[in-house]
Amino acid sequence: MKYSIKSKEKVRALGTFSISHINAAKVCKVLNRKKFVDAKKFVEDLINKEASINGRFFTKTSQEILKLLNQLENNAKTMNLDANTLNLFISAHRGSTMYRSKRDRRHGIKLKSAHIQAVLSDKDGFGKKVRERVNKR
Image 1 (spheres, rainbow, N blue to C red):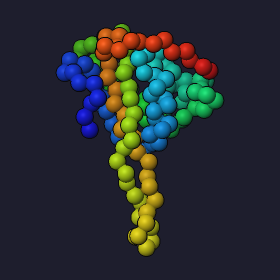
Image 2 (image 1 turned 30 degrees about the vertical axis):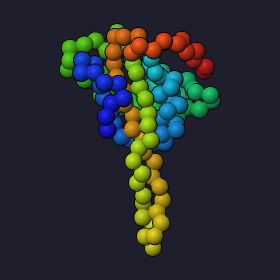
Image 3 (image 1 turned 180 degrees about the vertical axis):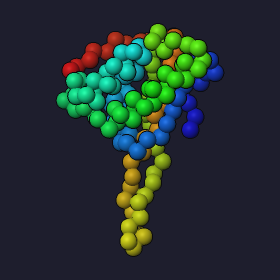
């Protein structure tokens, strides 16, 4: 999978997870363009059920996104950058379609998958106007 934000000097991480791409997109929309520290704290609050998005916690999705954020933080340490001062740009897309076979092998059950990519940058928005998002808890 290729990155939608192309630049060599930014800290990047991506992964394919067995979660719903619709739920992943909802969580990523809330996390996008936040400071990395605030985004990571919000995901931890979702897992601990201290914060919610429209009354839902998205526990499994939040756990997988937290793994990706930890990977992103380790990549920043490798590049000798402080992740706490950088902004997070994260997006989710539909993953590849996989099937679990049934007994007769004619039809199968579709399995969920989502591609999630995250980029840390010191810029405010890659040429787009940055909007203030209001967190509803």
